[in-house]
Image 1 (cartoon, rainbow, N blue to C red):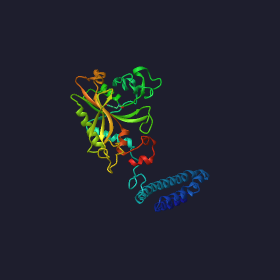
Image 2 (cartoon, rainbow, N blue to C red; image 1 turned 120 degrees about the vertical axis):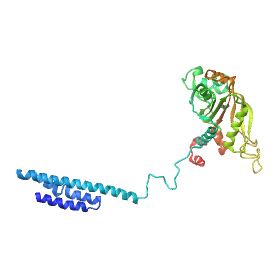
Image 3 (cartoon, rainbow, N blue to C red; image 1 turned 90 degrees about the horizontal axis):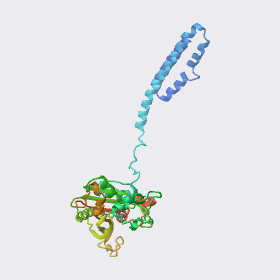
Image 4 (cartoon, protein in one colour; image 1 turned 135 degrees about the horizontal axis):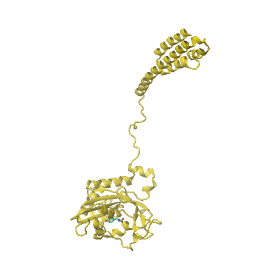
Length: 355
Ligand code: DAH
């Protein structure tokens, strides 16, 4: 038996060192170490040998098996590394790389793109961007912003109040505008400040130009010596960045509870010449007026500063301006979107036009 073990070992060693692939090695493993192979059979036969032969025969067969196992394993590891390297260099399709040409996986929704475009303009003017809660209290949404208790926006038919959401000034509601952040910001940050607040707002409204939820950007700048001219210059820079370098602004007197004076701001129409479209007919975007209403604005009402006077805002020393614009409105005007509801239907035929 000892000779046979030695023979097997010599033959197997020669074949293992001559093997040229991991598949060939696997065949050798089965041939020499598999269940039906001779060497394991010899090992099993050791039990039937006379006791004085068992020790040596068992040891040598066992050693031969371990030697062959180790040789096969070492050779297999070498082949595996070499075969992997060869496969990688031959295979020029790497499914983890982006396609060529690179296919975009998607793009921002027109409302996100518009919000970011507006944020960029104001960041360029030195403003910071902050966000605030969508569930507000009556105090922040109305009272501190100088809304008369009888203001129509406070009516149950106009505002989503939260059931069981407190009483009086602490009652909670879905904010109807981003303006409550004016108060929250001033409570937290002493003047001077220059911020914009993008966010979702909610009203009980639903038709082609109103949805129960839409998006606004609030702006607030407070310092000393701020005038309406600063407001106009800032909004002109905004209008020109968004609608084109030739735009002009028109301020119309208006009323908002938290600004005094208050204005509505129109931008000169970018589709026509003072109301007349290139073909000579009435411009359909501005309805022939030559102006597009884009936002509400005004100088911060001293009563609003009074609501935050403990936080360093003094109605006698500080002035500021505020503005509020609808992101949907800006996007509709700029891109000619005829119906607000397109923004929320997520029809790819609509969305893909703005990639
Ligand atoms: N909060 C107003 C609204 O939703 C918009 C607005 C108007 C905001 C004038 C302002 C402002 O900051 O000064 O209708």
